Amino acid sequence: MNDKHPIHTTLSTDAMRILERYEIELGTKNQVLERALLGMDKLRFKDKIDTQSISRIIKRVNTGIPGLDGLIEGGIPEGFVVIVTGPPGTGKTTFSLQFLMEGIRNNERCIFFSFEEMAEQLIKQTIRFGWDIGEYVDKGYLEIFGFSRFSTEEIIEIIDIFKPKRIVFDSLNIFSDISDFRRSPQWRNILKVIKDKKITCLAVTEKSHGDSANEFDDFDFMGDGVISFDKKQKNEFDTYPTCKIQIQKMRLTKANEIPHQFVIKENGIEVIGNMGFERKALNTLPARREKIERITTIDRELRISLNSIIGFSELMMVKAPGDLNEKQERYVHNVHASGKHLLELIQKRS
Image (cartoon, rainbow, N blue to C red; front, top):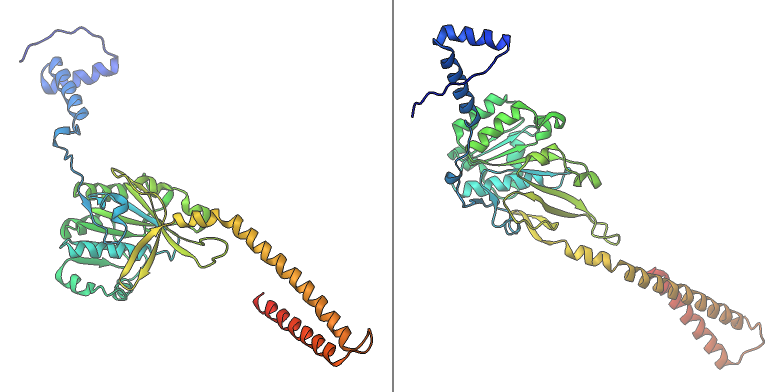
């Protein structure tokens, strides 16, 4: 339909000058206005989403961590960027390497970008778990870039050429300053490529121990998911730290957000159970304190009584009250020896 509709309007002097300039190029004022309006409409709907073409099925990627996928409905949604965060020495790099190994087992190409460790050091770390990654590097399933100092363009080029299904960046704190990370055009360009190609990505970030480990930062807000690592004491009676993992965020997923204990075994990380027992232990602390206080009181009373018995028997042995017959002396010596023996046992257990 190509009907023409008359309009009557007024323009500012500046707008009129622009209209007259383009009129010379296009022929008439109405052609200039039509081109301008149609162009505006095209830009407005350039990125309009076709909702009918969106798949209703959420494809999930197995992590390769025993006990973890069950906490996130079977795995990480494909194409997600998941933040793996926590203090140093909590298993983040091991977790990330194990995630890539699962991809390799499924014939997926994988890349590990490390910004602060040499490739040789990372390979040695995998050897201790029995992962022969040298074989997979030779076959073209894995690329490890240690101490990476690539530009944004080089990282994108590597992704374009290698065509991975899984990527790890370790760690983003070295790649970009947290204060301007979310506005960084470098990271946004990489993120767009990852999203367009539906690559599942783990981005490792660093946090301190203690309360700050539970605080969200700009890295966490950017991610589709956040998996946090930490070490903590179970309770005040057990000072050996327990490793824990927690799904703090996972879009499109009904996640189990309860902290879970994990162990690092000879073949990698394994989630072994939730920390519900920890809360139970903490709830029983008042009862345990009461029991300890009661035992301490009994201990003190026993010491007092035994010392009194020993002191009295010593007086009898030196015949302070007077002479004793043979039978009385034997009883006094037995009481003294028994009292000393009980006191030694109590002191050894204290």
